Length: 312
Ligand SMILES: Cc1cc2nc3c(=O)[nH]c(=O)nc-3n(C[C@H](O)[C@H](O)[C@H](O)COP(=O)(O)O)c2cc1C
Image (cartoon, rainbow, N blue to C red; front, side, top):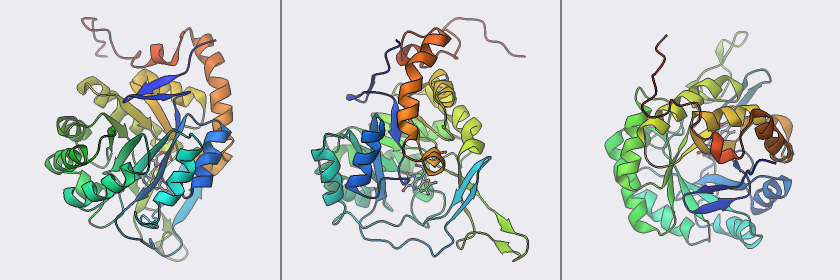
């Protein structure tokens, strides 16, 4: 059977499937549950300096065929409260990556320092939430700011730092290169795409906040493209995110260049058992495709160096 263990930024994972931030990681018990269900590791909800209520309802709209629109507004208990939850997962031996957000480099470093002290194996920096004023992609759309934030966090902590890149930009590669220059150990992509749903009868946006972020099947081709571009341009590993629901989706991300993948909206649709299914189906599917391991598939769709590139 094909080997599916993964090494990511010095972290060993039993399989490449990570729980994506914000979908299920609200409590230590839910993080533990994702790992017990079969995930290779988990990313926590994004946590900021102070507690935030997020936006009023409705904050989520679902479309079974193509995904989900959300504008949660980064609700979270704040970095003083959350470590208690992380400790539950860490004590249970769950490979845990702490997700942090903030408005500038100093604030990122302060939250990151506190998160790193909880025993998480790595930090993921949310530089990419598309609907939070002064946060997320408003910080993460400027390469100079991305480099500043990543450098400040890398100086503040000893665990590896993963920069989560926004797709809501003309040039994701510039953001990835900025993260690499800042000292990131890996990049992850993508967060949700800025999107809008309109209620025809009410003649208003469906979500209370108006604009939201699109996730799920509809964004998979966008995620694949960003991962492809980042893999070509960067030396550090890429974590693929966006619309992964089946092992074939995940293997497509590997072929595009993803060392590991995160799964979000599929958990909302299929339940946390999705991780057990993905973990069980991956080795035989890699066998059937002729890959001796997950690692052998990573980047395999890219032309070999020096090979002729098809242009039509
Ligand atoms: C309801 C919801 C909440 C989310 N919250 C966060 C968050 O707190 N931090 C973050 O970095 N990404 C957050 N995301 C983005 C996901 O982690 C992921 O990048 C995105 O949904 C694409 O993956 P998917 O298509 O598998 O869902 C959230 C997504 C959804 C749907």
